Image (cartoon, rainbow, N blue to C red; front, side, top):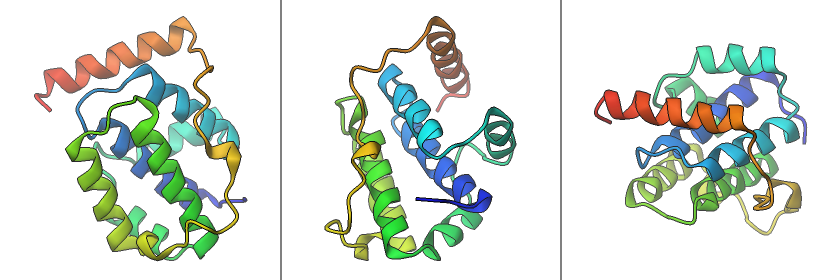
Length: 149
């Protein structure tokens, strides 16, 4: 599936929000995020540009962009959020609340899960993070903890 820059920005913003929803960024969540970065063909330059515009929370603009996507893209984004939410093997109440809210306001709850499913979006549990990625997780955890989030 091809996504334009605004769609990628919206997807990244909600996926990051989902990873941070429980206050802990797990190594498996980061591994899934890296997997998505590859699948969505997001270059490092694009990622820096996207993350520079993403707050700790997803933006209203991102939700509007998601709501205008076609049903297949919405179904894919819904699966991305579910995969992120379950990649750490711990479904938190805050994650469920965020997931339900995003689905409701963007119309993703109406996107048929039976549409052509993209197996590439499934989390690959054999994916191993390199030491640089592990350090990034630890730095993110420290940043979140220091903010009291």
